[in-house]
Length: 472
Image 1 (cartoon, one colour):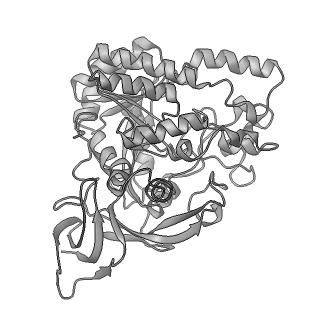
Image 2 (cartoon, rainbow, N blue to C red):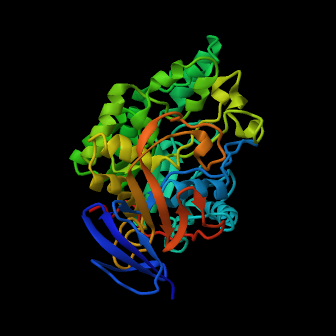
Image 3 (tube, rainbow, N blue to C red):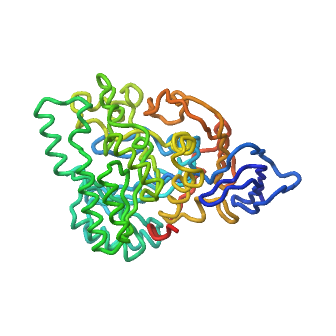
């Protein structure tokens, strides 16, 4: 029997805020109480500190193939270690079906890569690029046996990942019957492709033109359309990386009518705007992600959506590529699109910064309170994707995934200090208040200040129950 005692911390969950001690036994929370005194048990003093449930990031891309020989630059090991230093103890990545492949085979391939490497607990969404009868026939077993209850589909990237409305509708009905949910990358991909081709024909190959062919109205249109499909299929639907006011308006309208439409946003949409694309030379390539950064009006709408629960989750969409070529080669670098913005690998880093950014720019700035902060980074993700109450809360019987957080430490964000493979930060030089001090994964101390105490392969695969069904 292994035990750990955490003393005198201010425990904050999505609903509670109080000071107490936590006794961890064999990886789970055994007792929460005042003045616990257990001789010979290792103790950690959390006086003056906040204790949060470990973060749950439901949108990451570790060592992910992006077509051809292009891959994200973080491995499962480096990416999950980086997540741990940021206070995230569970991720959900993606198992992408290749054309001609079944989703079950894709899951097996990703599990084989993740198991020996992951430093924190992990699960997978299934990405479907073909809704063939064979692929659809595997959905019940994926949900009920493999614990994969969410299926991502793309309305963008024609000829690469994009599926049509019929495929989305068929997948919604099949998954919904068995407790699954479809997650959508909602942009009108065919119209965007026309605009990209026009921009290049007009001699605009630089990265600052990335955002122009992806206007917010096309995210709004696709979001409205897919919500209508979900309404017809009578299933919940979830929008990934929502960035546009028009898209949020569609979600709000649906929720006002009682439709179970849910959405996440990301820190870069909450704290950065399209002005980053005005940087000189190739520097805007650092901010080439999809959807692109939006204007201040969209940013204001997103914060309002977080406050009023029209947006349920803040995930990172950690999809890292190096800015420079000389670290891991051209196929893991933004330099791949040096002469053509449409070839710049889409994605940006962020898995290590989510809690600190949201605490500093959300809680300290008075935009959300502490309980709401825990809700959007831990509890709601766990509930939305079938991990609660094992994950996402501090309660007797839950996994002892715990973050001791110093609310007063000021520090400056820099790529030199983070633990990802990527060589830049979207938030380089930003001064923030609040820092992760210690992280426990199932009761084991894995992060202490700048020291890494965990190991590759200690993360456990998490089979998930129904998605999109439990949010109260």
